[in-house]
Length: 64
Length: 64
DNA sequence: ATAAAATGTAATATATATATGTCTAAATGA
DNA sequence: TCATTTAGACATATATATATTACATTTTAT
Image 1 (cartoon, rainbow over the protein chains, first blue to last red):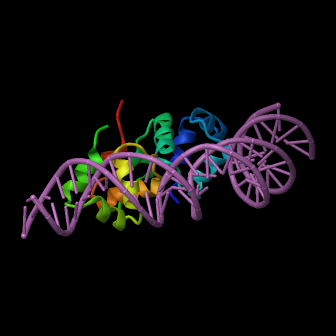
Image 2: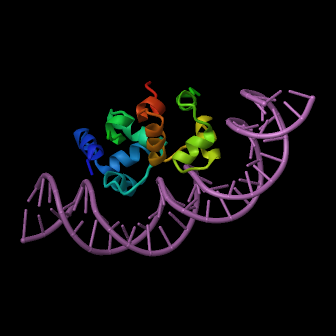
Image 3: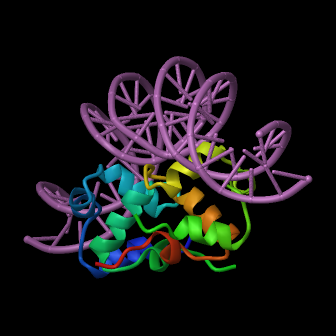
């Protein structure tokens, strides 16, 4: 439920639509990923991380 | 082309089939991921990383 | 209080990740 | 050398990520 993606996006002052456009997906896709209702592809995870200045672990990894 | 996944798998003495079974995918899927011919889902990346004792960044992140 | 922007949500359509089956070719060990 | 395991490769089938459209709700600013 941790919303690291949303936090990183807001920190960059980007709307869902702007982030979506930068990583070439639909706005809805970003919305669902932020809600944890999606299982995005590795490529998309990497694109999001790079756009937000984070790494995969920063945004998508959970330690046990 | 870096084969970090294959290296981590061999280090754990697992065959493609054993790794596939542990993360509940087909052997072919692991083979293609190791060859870089696939764009796996985040869930699968996480399952593979945990099984191999690595993180997402260890296996799937490339710094520029 | 109102308008505009941002986000949530749902239905249907399409692209692609993954499964399954089969065959071949290395690799490993007896 | 032979048998067995492991892995590469290809075709077709299925599940699901993602697109598209549209409308509702919430936020933000005026």
